[in-house]
Image (cartoon, rainbow, N blue to C red):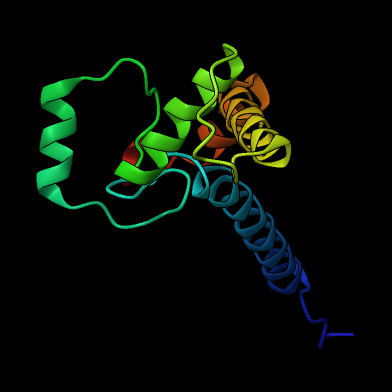
Length: 137
């Protein structure tokens, strides 16, 4: 009877492992939600690397017609999409058909959904839970 082995360290180790797995799941959820949202120095639609000179040009122009960070090509397409919604059509761009319009609509809807999710109270709670305690900072 004198050789009783304490299970407390093993129980604590199992709890720590479970907490670690749960933290990795939460971090993955945050990473996945933010991955598609707002890539710095990349076009938000095609993910093409943006030239720093082009970024300065965008900052100087502050084109309010384009609310996303786009490369020149995607910015042109976005403006064309908005024009098409207003009933204006460029007959020279025959490939910008109904499916193309749907693609842009769905992409914009997706961006809005991601933005709403990131602003949700549940997502904010998740981010708060993942912040290190003040003593660790």
